[in-house]
Length: 536
Image 1 (cartoon, helix red, strand yellow):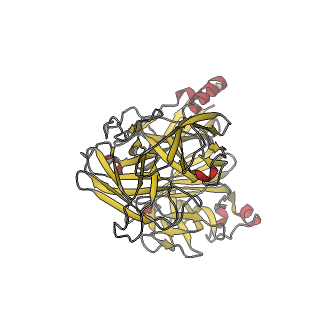
Image 2 (cartoon, rainbow, N blue to C red):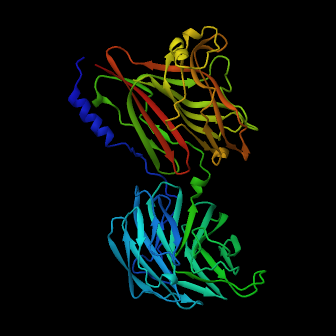
Image 3 (cartoon, helix red, strand yellow):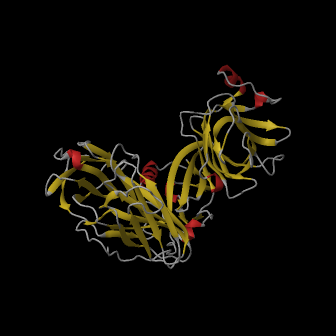
């Protein structure tokens, strides 16, 4: 059939404009939005915020100390998915006047007005304003620089993170007393984890203490007592304290915060700090559905192999999750060959072994895939599950260089093959210039694995009597830390598996591979690969 280039081009443009697919089915609501009314302060800039799990807005707190450190720049980072920023600067002892100017990365100026907080401390002021998305915040007013305390930014980003976020902009200060405030939080259908972040400024590293408690009506409670001796952002003057309560009842709709700095109290023999919380008290409430979710996203209208006559016939594939929204990464490219990777005739229970792991080192592919590109480079990717704990393992992507026959492989310096009929095999080295990755899930979520560029590392494709055909294997040196144990030097990952459901580009047809990596709010990742042959 004659190829329709114009139609193919138009469809490709359309596909590229839809790299993020979305679900046909709305997620089930997991929380109810609440009105924010600060019992301490109402800001003309923003009285607070209240986002549900379905809103997916996360508020990141970034700060630096300013004392004798002006001009200063607070780097914000990537503006992708950033919605807005609220910036606050605190002074103690003296200040530069009624208003100050704060600049974004492009030099645009934003005015902030001086405000006096209430509470037990004196001669403290803060300035607050709102900026659009920017990569950095600059402050250059050197007047009274020795009295500047801190610069704090609340960065609002659109994320599918499985948390409900709420916050109250306060105007509190304290010294040798107790101050309290209440923060409303989202309710939910079941118990969940509640994290509270408190940015507190005008602290001094002189050994005085601060005691913080958070509590809820169901009896949930957390506290910390800290003697201030240093700061994460230099010599002065701000810390973001974090407290967490677990299994907080879904009916709880507010959290009480108490800050106690009385002399010689709370088991201390020193004075309490003077402090300013001109900033926001922030809560992240882990949604109950997401907190216990191990179910993978699903695909709708998905077939792993199709034969069509024209790109306009590509089916629309959508994705959904029973608990939350999903995010989708999409790739589409021409290929020489695409196969699923599964068990072979011998390894019917475990086909991947992580030598050097202290326990649970045997794994298997749950949706493993092999792709060889037009330039003969290849990759193997998919989900490796642990044989013992099948809810744990690694979302994996390993890139290889050009796949070649044995003679070329040896001439290029490749490791000598061990198979008796090695001249019938094809080989490739790991490509360490590509983003090879092992992303842990389940109990491996906080573990790390990295491939090591030392022998052995190779891909081996070909017949083996004991494994059947077509067999595929690799051996790759690696390092990392798993379950609190460092992987010993010189250990390797070994795979012996088989190709199934292979599709190879034929004369008279293009082979396109479509990849979707679909992630829900709990971090569960599902990979979908569709092979599309288009007759030409």
